[in-house]
Length: 185
Length: 185
Image (tube, rainbow over all chains, first blue to last red):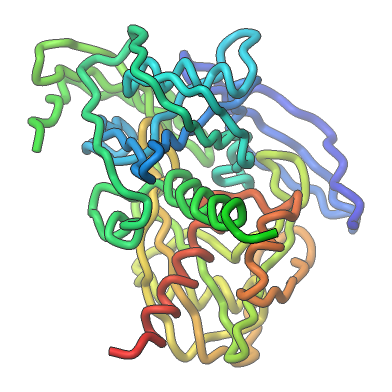
């Protein structure tokens, strides 16, 4: 393993309501010094949930995405708040966004987004044993829930409004996980 | 399809060397008004390349990722510059980062990262027919090239330093693409 660059100096350039931009001065092991900018993620990270019914249907959502100014199809997600565990945050988010709670929550993996300049971590949680349970969220309009059979993943990938790398990775990872679960040991 | 929220007002809050943060005031179709912040991506987006040798080996790279302050394994990537096409940018990036050019470049799909607050688009390009061709890049240290057989994708997913949602999605999408290519028609 290589020796990590040494951080010489960090400085917060900007802090808005949502974002913090940091400037970092580094010295690489070869002596080269350079300056980066990076976005600092929330301290606890975010959760992205794969809510899976017993028959293999995933409950997707379609909601307005301000970053790209269009409605996007994807998985429910949100920030981890306060002292919540990863699975507690996942369960709260699906109650708020799709109106279900889950009896079984399994942390599949943790993803980075663009690790070169974003500090964000997203924890992927598989939610099964779903039961109707609604909690009020803070969404500006009702979220559309879109049931989609996981076995029709290839068709989902062809939808113009299903583009999010995290959601795509999470569904492939879920399919792999289920295949290993059902494989004879 | 729902009526899109109406953008009432946008304002650049911050412009740094790398980032632009915009504030957006919106009115949803139901009359609710709200304010978002979003990061504006580069005008042309980025490319993420899957460099694939004829024997099914993918050429990954391991490089320092300032956003998460560790070395990360992933696919070569970079911004589209000036008037470059998507495939020209992809070819330049692999010459700079792994020392190969490609005779065949295929734009597989385009990904969003976190569309709720990031405007970034990443174009995934499958690069085949590789030949040695090095172009000087602007990296602070030499990039480590890590050959990895695509058929060992499951093992790759278990590596602690392979976490990037875009790279994970791109390799699964490549596997799907190759399966369809080789399927009897």
